[in-house]
Length: 116
Image (spheres, rainbow, N blue to C red):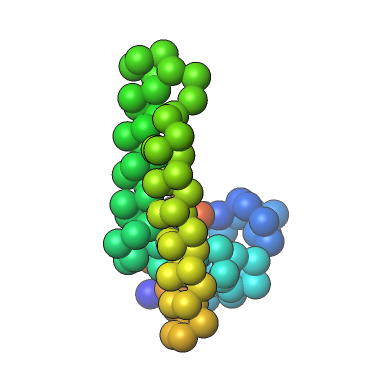
């Protein structure tokens, strides 16, 4: 990809913030490989999706009804979904090569592609 740079100023970035795609992936692999792979795995696991949806729904309900905390039943269900999600993620990360690619890291980090 001649002429393409990645603008990233976070952890591990050089002073200018401009990196080649290969440099950017190398930085991301050094600092964020597990975090990105975990996020990627969570997007693919049904119990993790259900957990995220339930947490969001519960927070929205609490805000609209001015509740201070969720019901005990809701808390228990969220906790179970969270535990199940964590187990599934660990299993997925252990049993496969879930490496993030350039596009995954761009989404994860918020970095931007720039054409020159």
